[in-house]
Amino acid sequence: MDYFFSCDWGTSSFRLRLIRASDLVVIAETKSSRGISDTYKLWQQTSTLSLRSDFYANIVKDEIKFLQQDLSMPTDGIPVLFSGMASSTIGMVDLPYKRLPFNLDGSDLKIEFITNSAAANPFVVISGACTDCDVMRGEETKIVGCQSLLDNSDQEQLLILPGTHPKHIVVKNNQAIDFKTYMTGEFFNLLSVDSILSASVAEGGDLDDPQNQDSFIEGVRASRHSNLLHASFMVRTNQVLKNIPPTQNFHYLSGLLIGTELGGLKPDVPIYLVGGAVHASLYKLACNELNLRVNMEIDADLALIKGQQAIFSRLTGQY
Ligand SMILES: Nc1ncnc2c1ncn2[C@@H]1O[C@H](COP(=O)(O)OP(=O)(O)OP(=O)(O)O)[C@@H](O)[C@H]1O
Ligand SMILES: O=C(O)C(=O)C[C@@H](O)[C@H](O)CO
Image (cartoon, rainbow, N blue to C red):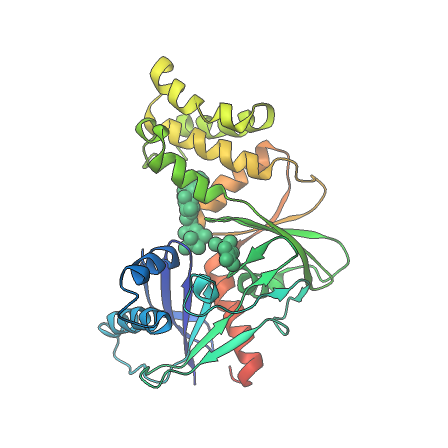
């Protein structure tokens, strides 16, 4: 089998890609807002009608059908590899975590094959990892995909994975040994969409615009010397008292939250930034302002695909 479907089913979005395994080329992809959080709420509203796993599997089947429309090749039988919240308490199946440490080659992560006679594609679910007090689902697969780029030594390296629940993962000797989760992306969303501050922020301003960049850096600086609960209210007073435009305020809030997340990191530990283009620019700017050294930037989508391929090929001996 020279193809696999890569499914990254996160808290807030669903991403499905058809991958050619030999060279990791993305043949087709789709992204929707049918994240696990909304899917779970939807299933609860209709729970008398279907089993949870069937309800989720039907969404995947719909998305494969959608991708199939523009494809000139059959996709029946191609395995779907799931990472992320698909294996969580609110996901398709609830799988136990691998307790840290885990090996960066993916050899000790937990995997489950789901057999569903009605599905044309076998499902393979990669479970998450945990410590005594923290959990991750999805990021462990990305870390496996980063392995070849990391330094296999006893020096600690810090992998920062921005997103809804950013992770700071400590790696050494080819193992992930510790991590911490931050609510940065979720707080950003709650504050900018659901709080009183929503009236004072607007998306859409470019970070390359010097005024937006200055506002972002002002937010990062405020995170160093001011209390978060006080400094976040400045988004409102910036607008009410100083007429700061909402697009600039958006960047101030972003800088404030990202700066708060990064505050307290040790400057001597090399950082590997594993994110998409938008987050990478923001985090690089914040690290620069906080005198933190970014050793390397790694594309998070590619890391995920490489990680899934590595884990699946260990299981099947294929690819
Ligand atoms: N300028 C910004 N500053 C801080 N956070 C942001 C900014 N723009 C978007 N975000 C946050 O980034 C998150 C979305 O990014 P991304 O899609 O990479 O996250 P993810 O973790 O992969 O998502 P999922 O929830 O599907 O797992 C949202 O939580 C959003 O609030
Ligand atoms: O395992 C869970 O239940 C999580 O909430 C993990 C979550 O933080 C993801 O790692 C990123 O969204």
